[in-house]
Image (cartoon, rainbow, N blue to C red; front, side, top):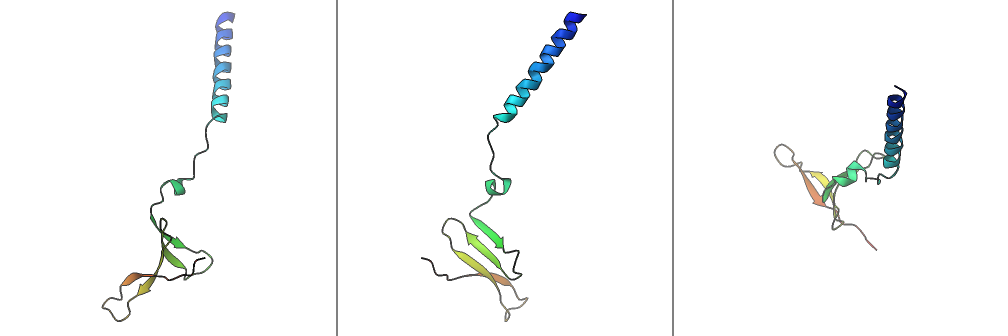
Length: 86
């Protein structure tokens, strides 16, 4: 009976130490948001209500939404935004 308790205790101790060591060696994964981002991203500035942009992350080009006021239904389209780069 004592032999069975000793075997169970040793196995449990090996499992606990092994899981602790495996948990320490796990590599850090990138955040989920950066793993699924695509080329085009809609970016919203939470500090200003009117800051909404469409960003091409490969070229760095930016578009802003423009509402066509003289069209039927007032559709919104993306207009390329000129910006000054250095």
